[in-house]
Image (cartoon, rainbow over all chains, first blue to last red; front, side):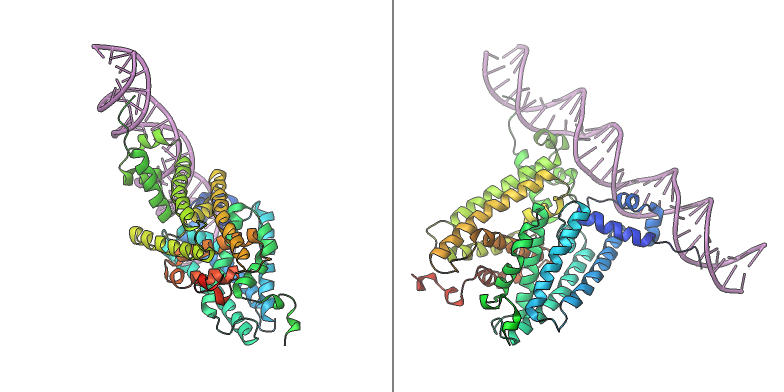
Length: 211
Length: 211
DNA sequence: ACAATATTTGACCGACCAGTCAACTACTAA
DNA sequence: TTAGTAGTTGACTGGTCGGTCAAATATTGT
């Protein structure tokens, strides 16, 4: 019943992601989003009770796509080191695409948003924290596999190390955003990540060399 | 000549640092800053041509203090590993103090500001980039000393590794801010940093064990 | 045909935004 | 004394902010 559903809701979410990712939450107005999405303001507030709610739903939408990718990259039948390699490639590739689409390096939308709104909007800060934990689970499982394969120190605190990996990637992406430059990500991220994890040089190459 | 100078200018800079560090650039208005500093708006614009100029001067002020601390921590007569240890202690301590003073973990003001305004204000983004390079110089010099002391791999790309260290610390501080939690910083930063640098376990302790 | 519902429209609101300005005050140098 | 200047004051502007609303418009089930 009721009027035919349109894709206005999706258009708003998509547009919000673009604008907020490129600029920032507070720099983008509801009017900006509506204008770019071609949707009237009244419709905006028909779908979302507030700007913050739109941001939350936008994050949900974005994280869902991410998780799908992560499930694939971190599937158990990929050798553990290869999972991290895939992830690094994915991150680099995604940054390249978004940079081409939006005109500058944008970094990690969750980190940028979380950092901006940490003290301003509890709901958003909490959601970002959730997303982070969600991702570190993949890292931790993989680190455990690396321990079991004898590739990294068996005394590794995998929970702590997973958080470190996440923070490291966030830091690299923030810096790439600030400097508007991807070259460092492209050249060094994988090697730096392996250093942090404690993968010895002999394992940098193919995992097939090992049992 | 003219009227007796007041400390209004300094009050504005100090207040701006507090408010913007705690919240964000766009979340804090000129009126907020004036009100908290007890300065009239007209006086604000007597000292600063715009809000962005105040932010720039605030960063200058803040970085100057930082550099003074870094000069001391990274002085050549401190053993290189000890320099990093001092820095970790300094960062942790500073975060604790600011957290107690402002009521929450605030992270790195440059990274937060840089990330927020990367696409919005070129001047500020550029200044942040400058500050970053300034700090990595200390890291690079220290890494070089570690190479020469035989403590880390002599093939280390010290320039790249210095950038990695910086990004890693930025990431940790951003995450501490988002999660409003310092415990990870306190417990693991030093060890994680040494892993990233590639300091072998045998050097984790006192440097006196080595030549 | 008609009632119920879902969606759209765009004018409208008060609050707040960054920034302006002319008058005013306190100080100094001549 | 007085001219010049550095600093202060607070009312003011035009524009933008997030958000509201009543009316219009489709679409459905009955």
